[in-house]
Image (cartoon, rainbow, N blue to C red; front, side, top):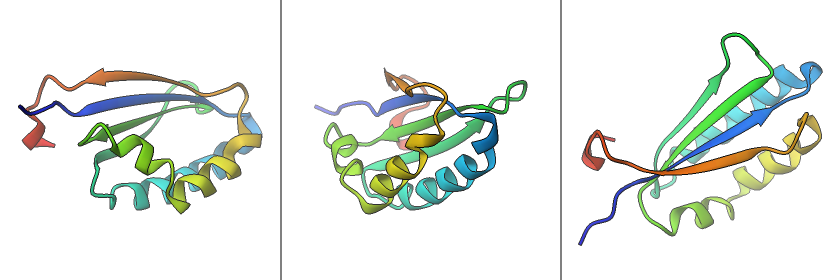
Length: 105
């Protein structure tokens, strides 16, 4: 029996003075994250009306992939680098992929 991709939306609110540094640190993390075998996509989105707000869209191929991602050097570097940049704690919401089919990712 197959399982569907797990898609996680991470909501991040960054202090105004850290927007550029957060953006750069997050791009570095995303570029490495998409190379992980368990990650199908890792999108970095910035709010068009409020540039201090970002959404990370992370699509994981297996139930184990999120935990594996959190053990990588690039994730740990990102986590520690951006922690003081946050205007409030980041939040996440988990989704099950329904369309497109997982193979389309």
